[in-house]
Image 1: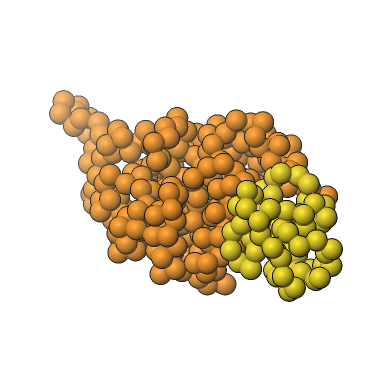
Image 2 (image 1 turned 120 degrees about the horizontal axis):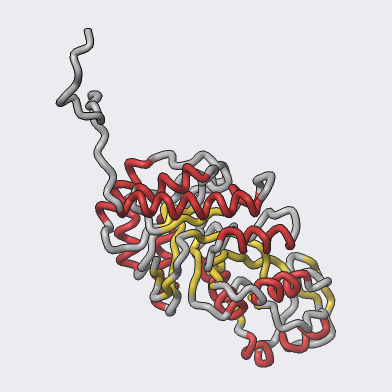
Amino acid sequence: MQIIVNSKPTDITVTSLAAAMVELGFLDCAVATALNGQFVPKGMRESVELSQGDRLEVLAPMQGG
Amino acid sequence: MQLYGKKTTSSLMLGTAQYPSPAVLVDAIRASQAEIITVSLRRETADGSGAGFWNMLTGLGLHILPNTAGCHSVQEAVTTAQMARELFGTNWIKLEVIGHADNLQPDVFALVDAAKILAADGFDVFPYTTDDLVVGEKLIEAGCKVLMPWGAPIGSGQGLRNPDALRAMRAHFPDVPLIVDAGIGKPSDAARAMELGMDGVLLNTAVAQAGDPAGMAKAMSLAIEAGRSGFTADPMQPRDIAVPSTPVLGMAELM
């Protein structure tokens, strides 16, 4: 199925958010996730099932003022 | 200053953006003697660049204040704050809800709404706000224990555009820590903010975009300390006329 990862349409072969993070290469723990605008805590990624067209945001620490 | 139970010796909070290089950033942080630095969250790239930045910061052992920079709605700001809490392991959040594209002024209505939600969810909210007293009151009612009024628009370096309003805030909120956030350009701006009785100054561009960021960081630190000392030493009031400082009694008649 196709989901939108950080604004980019992306094909994935798995359905759980945790598995998708591995497939997408976000192996590092220093990221936080939001699905369709809602925060998904790290511990919940295993139980969240993705659907076609879901918008996933993967954010990391960055410089800021 | 003391913010949400955290005591610091320095009254300067330093932003980490726009430095020419990570090494220059680290030098500037050290020279500033700031104990609190601000950070943000952005989309992670495939190369994992965020992890490198995070590893560098944690090595400095400073207190981290994540921001919600760039958020324009309550929903965006709340979600970003929740992500920041997990990522940085802190309840602190510098709450920015931008309301206008030109001057980046806060949308104070959305700011109050977001502050309510976040304070109820256990966050220690540092709201980037205007110098409006009524908005300040609403933010306190929402659960904020710190207010961060702007000095001038973000990144403008214009200094304090409305010192009278900041003075009024000091008088109106005697027991609330006040941090001037945004608009500081030169050390004299920072000193003036402290002379008005502010508890601290948060700045970024003034240091990051200086020709010598570490040198400017040190200058800001000294100015803030001088301004604070000047405020606590209870300065004289200006007078409309000249008053001789040398005694006139006992003057010789030499004409």
